[in-house]
Image (cartoon, rainbow, N blue to C red; front, top):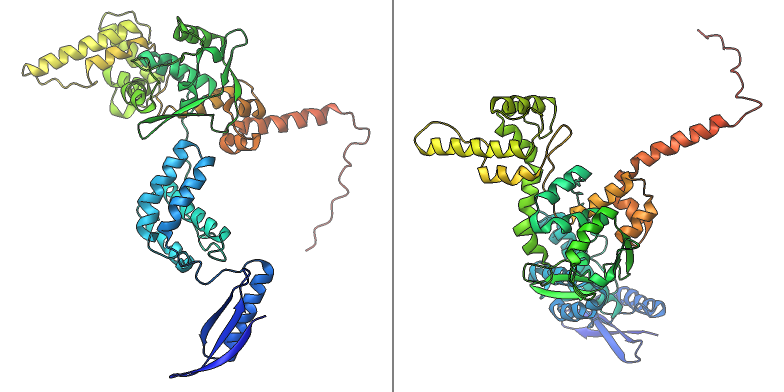
Length: 467
């Protein structure tokens, strides 16, 4: 038990509390102005010892910069390489500049709240939430080590993440994107029809492709972390078998031709691992720009007024294409085929030449090379542009196409490698709206098919109005 005694100072009587720590060492705390203050402290110490929550007053006098490296090293074992790199970046960029020299015992809830608010004023919600989580995880370790009694960073209001609107491509849009993607064509189709993550696709080996069962065995993952390739397991640490449609087998067979079972299905230009950033910059983004704006380019090239350019191949677009084809001696099909694209490119070059020669003709459709690059596409009624997207967005397209083909949530979960069906529903709830309508229709049909001997009773006599 703690003992309380008084002692004299130049400022008057003061009180001290002597007590034993859980490690059986005797210590004291001095400077209480009243005996009641000393008794309150003594009671709190004894209570914390009984609850197993005792924290030494000196244990928390360690700067955050001393705890951070040990936390980062100790946590790396449970993180994927990219997560580790992102957390390390948040630590170096946002956490240590503010908290490096602060003792963990001096970190206050109000100070953390003010830091989060200041950071939210200049950075996005995802960045703020990651930085806060890094600080909170370091303080979690401090609590477990008995340096502070509780984690004051928990419970701080955080900015809400606004979910980016997803671009779900149709089958026609996927085919258009693949058509202008050049060497990346089989990659685009595989991502869009299997839902593989980029690292899973880049790590896929020939021996993991079962052409008879039409399955991809996803057991490895490779990511580029600060220019260094890191191999590991898929995101959930579990392998999975992913089905692929028969037409994709042709693309895969071509990509695997002449390769051994331990070789990669998809490789870069020099035969190495297919790098995400390089592939996106050189092939994927230009392909998205071309395929995603093809209808708009066509509408400009055939002379449609700005007010009529919708990015959708509607009736007005078909009329304009027919008119342009007729004026230029082409078969009037109303579709943008190879011959039409070629003629549009030639007309654009002619206009450019006249403009360069001092004419006053305005070039309206971009470069002729771009128009020629679109000659692999045949656009017609129903074609439409789509927004900018990343390779990972094709994973969302795979989910959308699977659901529209009738796949249930459990099948989509297994295909995408989500940890649970609940996660799939949370991620793609908007794709299952039609299923809710189907439930109501099915219930209605079931109810009407049952013969009820005593249908709902007729309403009783109407009550007289009371005035």
